[in-house]
Image (cartoon, rainbow, N blue to C red; front, side, top):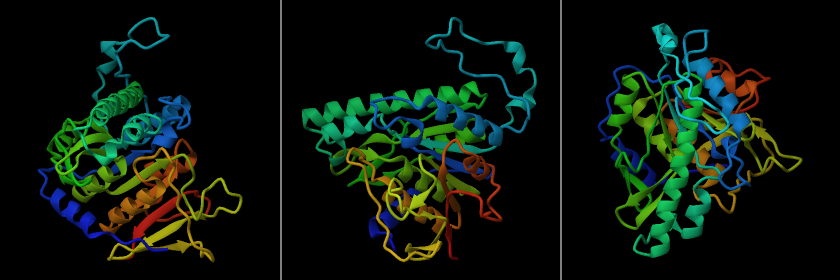
Length: 339
């Protein structure tokens, strides 16, 4: 199966290339936390606490140079916890705070999608009261999730900072990104923090408003930050030739992308066509959109790893262990350029 990069997609990347973005040092990795992995998508606004905790621990292992766990940075009151924990003496060892240069982007999962689909935010028409109300409701929901993810990372000692595309002034035109000032993202990384961005409701110059997915955000960031590699953490082991719940579903281990944006499955060799589905409530395009965005990143010469979150396979991908060789026992999908 092949997918072709549209002229609109090319234009949006060209427009984004004009963004004010200056990193003083290379970015190690951009990580996408899939909404289906970190939330329970069948339960409205419910975080998958166990997965998020394991993902946060794995990110700490690959980001923080010290073998010792750094002090926590979430000093806010938590439900069920009697006191706010903060011991200034724990911050005497500066080496505990040395952090590799990562950027994190997360999807919405069971946060935001319901509000957006119920009100039609992705289709625009901001003059309608229902759409305007849904725009507000969607942003309340997705920023709530963002805060909880930032707190989970902060508790592991990762100096994480939540950043919203809407608040950064990012705009679209007919759902394609036109204004993407990444200067604050660059400044945040250069200051020693880990930006945590998210899919968001944003203003659109033509249709009034729309939904900007985390996958689209990652492809634009990758085009300018030029990370060494990109990792998509999902709720399944990678990309399959059909819905993974079907008994004969085959995991696609390697996908190669040509210069024109078309892609093909290299491993394994398939006899049948590929069926990519989108959940009814998903306003961001599902797995088909992930493949499209991953292909655009791979065209830049940046390998993309799509792997199940909170597993030994995700830890190997996040640590960069797969960059020179994909072992047979690794479960996931790598998308790479033929160039």
